Length: 257
Image (cartoon, rainbow, N blue to C red):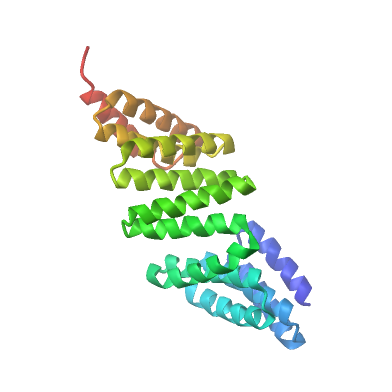
């Protein structure tokens, strides 16, 4: 029955029906405990943890991941251990306990480096950069984001490049390094355009507009806002009202020729 429950759980998860997916994985987990198959048990626990994390039940997700980790350590599966450590770190970030996430991330980093898992390393370096940026440790944030970009390039992770360039640009903006911020955000915009990600492109353009507003470059700021409002309208993005208001305000303060 375990395989049937797992199949149903995957279907529910694909449909976004998290409660049903959770129930199916819980039944699969019960069957796997009876069978004694540690590999299947670890898989079911991990999947249940993922669903709980998506549902916002961080406490149960952590319980699942910790049991998974214990099984993986017994089996000495370094790659699987690293991914579970990242999941535990992400839970603590989601629960606004970033100081507890860092040890998990750093242990995962030590495991992933020898494995040359550049896709996972790119995500992990990005997460570390986000944590350093939250603490306004700008040099450390820039270093981690730069390492993330190197990993994303190796595996051709276009989405990773877009998101990390955006966050690196924001770090430069927040630290007052405006020209580097502008260059990174322009790179991010190009990648989001390539992906067809309108929301991502609009988010980057808002940061670029913030640079130009800070520099009192109304013409460039207006150009960004006009593109943003166009994206808002075409893709029904939720920021249309505030973006339109800012564009109107900029037009009102534009010097008359």
